[in-house]
Image (cartoon, rainbow, N blue to C red; front, side):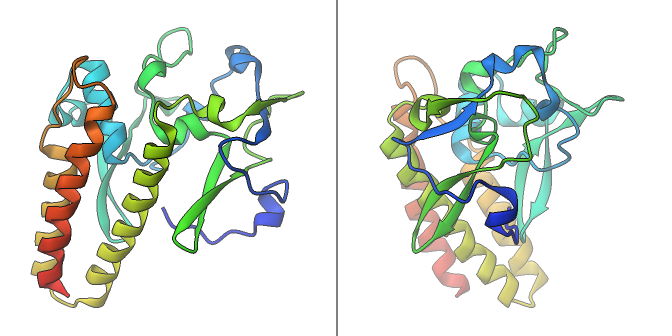
Length: 228
């Protein structure tokens, strides 16, 4: 999701890499779940998030959409997000004890919080959002450990490639005045990267995702060339 931000107002003024120490440790949240409620449609899921959810929950994308996820247009592109539910507007994966029911395979947005990403010059860095988490006395933790993602270098390359691919697709849709092209491209992207099941399971592991993703990305770039 594109946001116009003043980094000095919302952060500690620093940019971080995965080997840096960042003051984000919160004692395992100590029973707090404020960041798991009233998030609106902001917890947007990328294809890797869906891969992990399908593998961890044992549900298809369509089954997840029936209850835990929803679709919305984000910067011209249809994308899934976590669905807030009930009077407290809580994440549907939150259990009765107020703990994350999918913590081992939670989305990247949740893994980063309270950090965000800033993209520039074909890459990105992390920044600490100092007003997002109210937990007092945060401790320093290595960012790589905080994220807890296997093959972090491959993951970060994927995140950058996905972000800038979406930027290209957004430009195509923004520049066209043809509603049919907008609809067809959006439905193609949704099916190509989300609806069409990824091969999951212990034999493939999370590493198996990247080969599948990049083959789909190659196909999508060839398809998108017709709309330029």
